[in-house]
Image 1 (tube, rainbow, N blue to C red):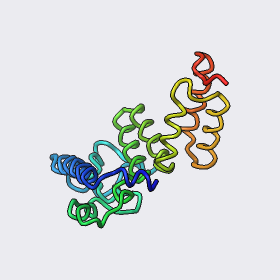
Image 2 (cartoon, rainbow, N blue to C red):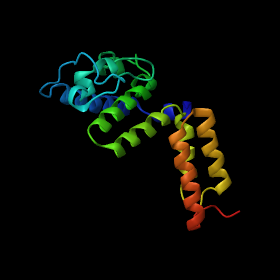
Image 3 (cartoon, helix red, strand yellow):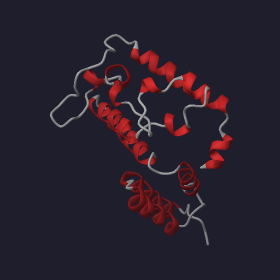
Image 4 (cartoon, rainbow, N blue to C red):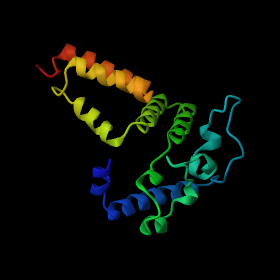
Length: 181
C-alpha cells in the first residue's frame, strides 16, 4: 500500500476532498436537510424519507475508516497534512446505511452494489486491484478464481463478493473465458 500512497499526489487528494465537500454541502443544504432524531423502524433500518441524505439528516452516521466524522474532514487539514488517505476513506457501516436507504426507496440493485462496496473496504486496495485483474477474461483458471472466492469468504468475510467471483468462475468456464494452462 505504500506504493499506492506514493502515487497519490497531494493535489489529487485536495481535488478529491473538494469534490466530496462540494457534494456534501449540496446535500446538506437541501430543503429538510436538518438532522433527524432517530432512524426509522424498530429493527434500526434507515428510511429514505426520514434519513436521506445522510450528510444532512444523519451526519452522526457518516464516518471514515478511522472514525472521523464529516466535520473532522476539512480541506485545511488535508493541505496541512493532518489527514491520511485512510482518514477520508468511507467506513463500511456508512455504505450499509446507504444500502438501507436505497432499499427503502425501492432500489434493491443499488443496495446490493453498496453492500458489495462495503465488503471491499475490508480488503487492502492492492489486493482489490489484483482481484480485479484476475477477473478479466483469460487471466485466471477456474481453480484460481475459486481460490480467490474462498479467500474473500474466509479471510475478509466478503460473502457477497465471494459469491460474485464464484459465479464469474462458472460463467467463464461455460463461455471459454478462463486462462488456458
